[in-house]
Image (cartoon, rainbow, N blue to C red; front, side, top):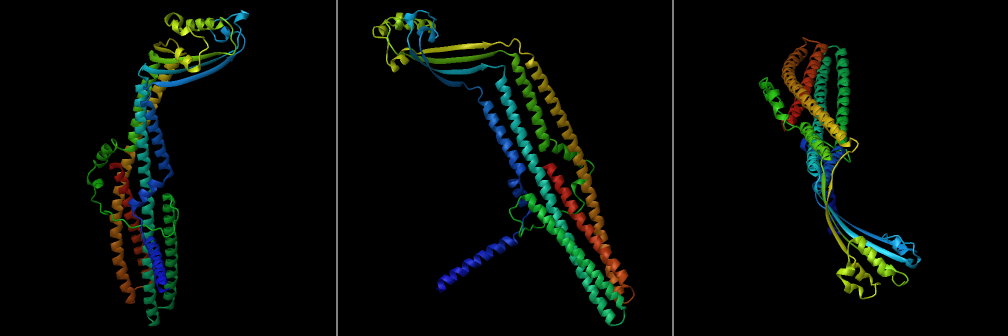
Length: 478
């Protein structure tokens, strides 16, 4: 009994440890980006589009292969036998007989020259795959930026909550100090009331900050498409918070970053792929002006069965059918006709077989200007894609210039806020000493405390703003 009880306790402790481990687990930024990429509906949709493009490419690559098909037909005729077989119409009543005609064939058709249509379609399908691949990378990059923004928003709200928590602790200490001074009779009781009111205001602001933290965590969890947001937490990130980065080193940083991004940024690669695809679509449209050469081959046979015997009609039917097919079995193989004509099924299929091999050349003469209009349309599509590519490059240049400027401004605001926080801390310490010595009022001490809190909030805001601006800059160089 004790053994079972011990086993049960070990299992329960294991479950509790697993729950505690999951509850204490903090998601890093890379883990959030990876999870969002794997569970984003938009990313999954782009992956499906890429697979469709690859399937279309495989289809285009196999268009040069021959097409093989089989045909089987069965028909019944009652009355004029020769007319029913399609050999020769007859109005003679002595040829009337009921019969069945079974025919089959296997045909092959292979394009030898199609005006470079197959080659153009294959190359266009290849660039379609490149475009789909670049579009998928672009969606993933934008999703990574969005996740990083939400992630840093959570850290910003947590930083603001930490500032509010520190302000509450500072105000509580001031309340204790004020209570001591009031009890000693050095300060009026109104200072105590002001201190308690200020503490209530600071606690209210702390509650608001904590609510914004929960809201930002919920937004991030929903962006990741998490099944549950319970016990969801993220880890802090460390970043270079000084202004001595490349974006502040020289004025040519934006030009160098654009020169690097324009060659590998996904949206630009997608635009270039569309332009190349349009170029090959024009070549495919021009194929309508070229002749087409096709190789065709077929194997044919049939089985003929008369339901009732009429003397002389079998020989007539065989002779007309041989003339229609181009074969003279009666002359070349007279031994086949020493026996009765009504042969069994397999024997007729073997004796009645025929082979056909030929080349077919199709010359386009007039197609209602369809080819001309298709070429014009393909050229207009290519011009539109080229304009879209130029706009994408211009937009990329604007985004990089704006991102570099925002990063520089954020770095300057961070340095200013850090100086302001340092000055505010010194001013608050002096004001606190003066208040404790009885040479200042609680109102002046509260103002110094509020200025210090504002400086700390500005520093937190500038810190995470600089981090997100630099994260955006990194996306252009990756």
